[in-house]
Image 1 (spheres, rainbow, N blue to C red):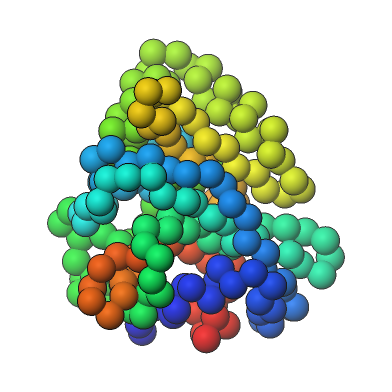
Image 2 (image 1 turned 180 degrees about the horizontal axis):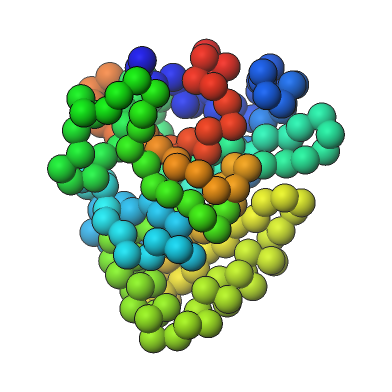
Length: 215
């Protein structure tokens, strides 16, 4: 099955009728800008899987907004339904799974995805250079992620948060960390392209909804 139009996951005020959660209202929140120095983007659990690999397709270096789609449930609970790196201003008209080098979607079975495992209810976007800086930081200081946790506490709303972790004040090189859906799981990312094939966005779907619920 082809991926849905993930742009709909980031329509502020959109109502999703979910088989699991009932009536859910989506609200979009800005989570800062991500600095890409190499253009190679990694998505991973910063607490449990810091040794990571970037996606195969490189993006143009630059500064790009990150936005979160937060699901508001009728019982008052809030969860991050997806994270989007907005690369271009145009509309994405087709979507494909973002792959690591060597991955091939033809090898997947029905309902299977390539994604990153989360065991800390936390994910992130980072340039390949920032991911390497982060790995060096936590290897040098076992309490470094505790300080990341302190930054997450500053934006905490029951039950989600986000933070920008800076590594180089001169360039702004950073990683943007955020809560992941209902917590732990395996989460796929998708590239949204315009009609010319240019990448407009990179989205990680935190699997709150069935794909047909986003139709």
